[in-house]
Amino acid sequence: MSSNNQIVLIGRIGNEVNETLRYVNGTAVSEVSLAVNRPGRNRDGERITDWVRCEFWDRQAEVLSQYAQKGGLISVAGALRIDSWEKDGQRRQKVFVRAHHFEFLGARQRHEEAAPAEAAA
Image (tube, rainbow, N blue to C red; front, side, top):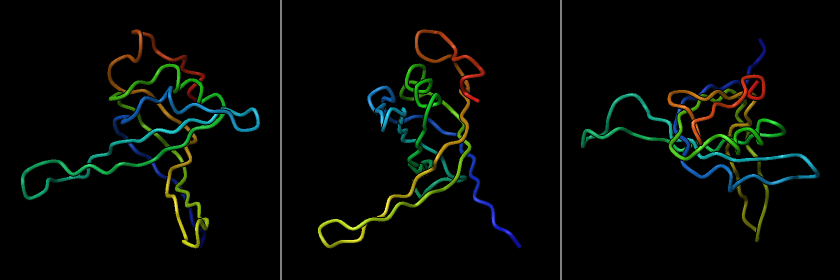
């Protein structure tokens, strides 16, 4: 039996994406903190929200950085990743989604413009 590492999330962007855009060896990289609600509610009747780090590369990072805004609703498809390293004698880990595809959902994004459909593919 083979295994498969795929994840699909729908959530709201929790950070200013244009502030996270950077270039690594000439390749665009951007990170999004995605607020994803769990089914059900806690004891106080409030929704339970998980925050998931999503990483975008290349043209997707540039398009997302240009058109997305904090609070915007998007769907993200990708693979779950875990990076491990040691710092100051302590073992550290970072769990995140390496996005392969995203799509804007709901209302139009920044400046009432929609991102070109082919750029988000």
